[in-house]
Length: 527
Image 1 (spheres, one colour):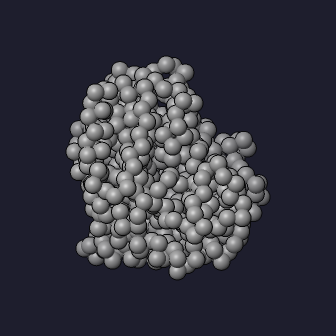
Image 2 (cartoon, one colour):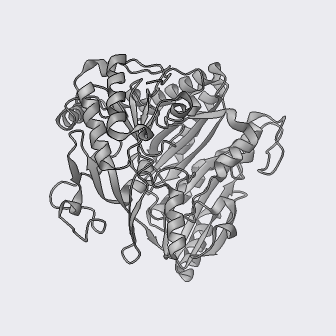
Image 3 (cartoon, helix red, strand yellow):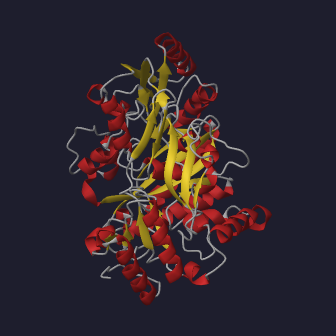
């Protein structure tokens, strides 16, 4: 084994695991050279980082190779960290909590196993990207829409298992799951829901079987490796109207949120609106096509964000006369806001990607890389981000308090961030990307320190992150203290029952086995 990553696990155990995996799966399935392995930590951690590093990467081609890898890992007592495509940058990418873990990366398992137009569902493997499914839908001419996050290069399964979001009607991806196939640490294969019946036609049509529904247990956990997942799709609408409600004053956020909340709750506004904060920079705002060389960091950031101090991206889907009525209800609800602009555009359901405004691609269910392309244009490849993503009440008071807190801590740490919320009917999910130069160790540490401070303040208000970087998972978990951390004990009980050797992604979302203790000793956080 020639991997150069720093490890905190016994070298002899890793060498044995490496030799046995190569023998079982072949050299083509194992990556060890430093350039290849480097891709499977979070690139935003910077070249100087020594935490959360994989030792080598295994890329199985199918379920049997996953079972073989897990068996070898258990016998060698080496932890395995699972990732789908590993594009979850800012939340760790493929970076393991335990330094030196083997990364079990599932990119090669990239088949779209079924698409049912009448039932509006698909069955996919973990290596299927949002781009892949969209392309397949278009090539087949199917009248189905999918939900996509802001960047389309990631795995549908991976994003969903992390409770990821898109913005259409099925934008809460975890809620659109219907049936999984899971390999347990023992090698046993389980199908959830009605997939537990042989050849049931209902596996992707009905989300529960008979007895407890287990799909949620395999999200944000380390209880098994998901190898197939059913997802619900949206029938192609007659029309889609999307765009922004734009406000311009710092103090507008509370009134804007309170105006939108009832419309999201009653379904007038469909999907999951995105509300973006963009403070006015000294020297004025920049535009996306502007040459921003020489401008301040805040001005460059303004060129990547939607217009306005506050921009609420909304969408309506369905029959044209219904959508027109929904649009009118929105205009009436925000008419009292000073200097408000409602900027909406409409598209037919069969619209081609080239005919959609770049800002409308995501609410139109079209995967793209527009946001990352803007970031690279204005910041280059040196910019990284660490994400702070709490769940807060869907109230104007909570949004205003949250925004003040984030901007205050960013200013104290000398950093800037892109900040906003994804709206659910009753809650807002914060999305704050704290930016830093990945080659500047001082800035990297300042970003970690800022997010730690934000986590502490949010916990004081009873708010918790819905996702977190490996450096933060134990900190977030510690805040779930009811009953003397009873929930964590339940997780450990489940972990011990399903993975007695404790080798499958130890520490994922703060879930640890009760033994072996050396796994917990290998955690590497930064403050």
